[in-house]
Image (cartoon, rainbow, N blue to C red; front, side, top):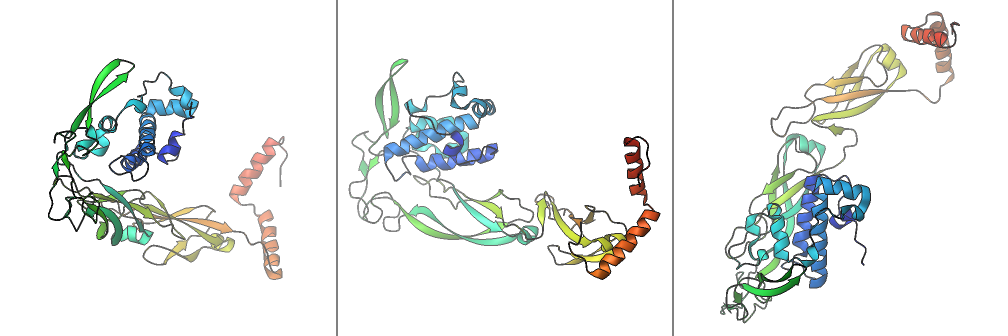
Length: 381
């Protein structure tokens, strides 16, 4: 028996992947390995198609996923798993119709191909944190399957027309006898000769070889609104691949990736920055320069500031993508202790240490009192 692959590896996701990420991964892989799209060995494509369907069935179900995470493939015995090895492409697509949309099913179900919406596409748009703050228009270049310029998308050589498929008589369907555990049955499936279209091309277009499609480069401008988060998508309607039989095009989903900032990190709509200050600045107070997305600003450090203390710059964060209300920038100060001192600095610090022993600070006095109590009442000093 062939050992089953790890479901997370099959879908190309991490073990902590959320449901939406798993759904996107399944959709991408299923469309890739479907026979209408897969360019490699058809049997290998069918095998991979069924592997991703099985992986999605498990990882999209919280109970099955938990059992799989704890016990592996053995933990799924008796859990009501479908036997995808005996299912056709149309049956599998219909199981997860909500992922692909009813308009995308068409001939994949095995029926006569009516208008079928074109496939959606995905791409990535990379932003800086400064661009996230204000929103930006980005020009993207990508490739997509489009109508062949030579035949206008018909697949037939110019001047010729397709004919009715002799295998299915133009119905787009054929019947197949199936023997299973439950006995003999008849399955209706898409015609293997015309792929459910009911038509057959006599003289294929020499440029697209009868597919009616060719790869084309496309440039679009996408508007990314302010405050968008990593992994969110902006949809461009009608920028996907063309549909079948006059149906509408699919959409282009532009997923956002944000470059790391050298000084600032994001926490929701807030920005966080760690700023180093010296011991004397913390003790005596100071003004220090801190970075913001709109440029450097001066921050007042009050006397007696403690290590790790946080100061807020109001409305210097990122806007909420829905309301537009800006978050804050949170400045956490980190007191740096010098590793090397010159002679003068050491003398001054030793003099300071002497005064501290005579005039113990309240926080230190509290600690010393607790220490003395812990060790039997003797006063520590």
